[in-house]
Image (cartoon, rainbow, N blue to C red; front, side, top):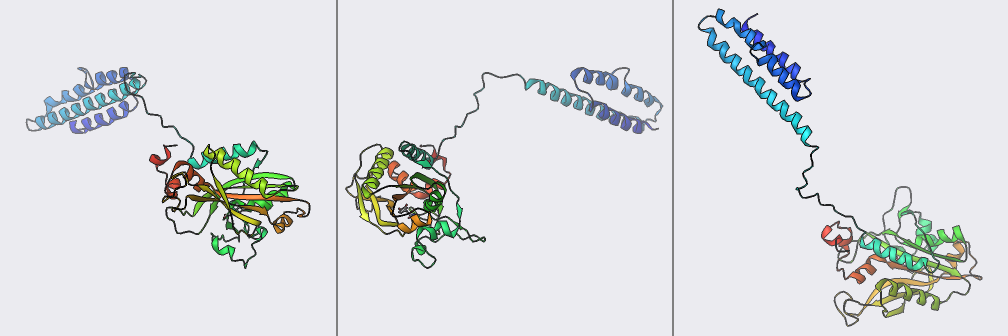
Length: 336
Ligand code: DAH
């Protein structure tokens, strides 16, 4: 075998053995074995003296190159082995990793506050389906298929015939059927509408609905409960006003406004210069709805309300664009 071939074999043998070396001792053993005075390399180079004058420098250069490669490989391997050992050392002078705390979304914060207020008045807090049947979202709420109220709540229709619910009112008849009278329940949740988005419209927002059914429930009960709700969330006594409003599932129906906290009722862009911000729909539950829920309207009556949670949060914190809620922008979210 020529010296050139022997050197090549030596390279392969070295690579094979260094791959198995697991510690510094094994590396220095390899160095002695391959490059030492009595090592493999010098054994091969003993053959140099038999070569012609022309070949000698060529093989000499090859041997040198191989030696350099081996030295390099040994250095690298020892760095790797030492590096692994070093990772276990802790440098106490390095600045620590910054811990980012998560926090609750402003909608969740206010929803939790509302839930607390209502549980203190013996209301249950119920969750409900976001993909809902036409029956619970519309029909059982006194909105038959031909009813124009459907136009105001256009939504996303699913292939299986369900809709993405347009209102948390979908839970009214569900709760009546499940629990019967007397009943006190609130239903927070996400709702959907087919909207062109702008500063005050989103396709995806939150409502907080409530329902109370008992003997002789009247408008006084409704107003008192709404006032408790508003002063509980806004943490002060604020003016509210009740206007007639039409919702097919209540009779009589109202819209309730809260004085604009941004301007204290004087008029500003937030309240469109009226001094009032419209937050609720509410009213006394329509007899047809009670019937759909299996409740006798001659024996029982009730009130219901539904508020736009996003709006309330906007009033509470002075937020001027509804799209911020879903923006995922940490500069916004970190403020709560
Ligand atoms: N579901 C209505 C809406 O989305 C709000 C509403 C109005 C809910 C009157 C009610 C109610 O429970 O009584 O616009």
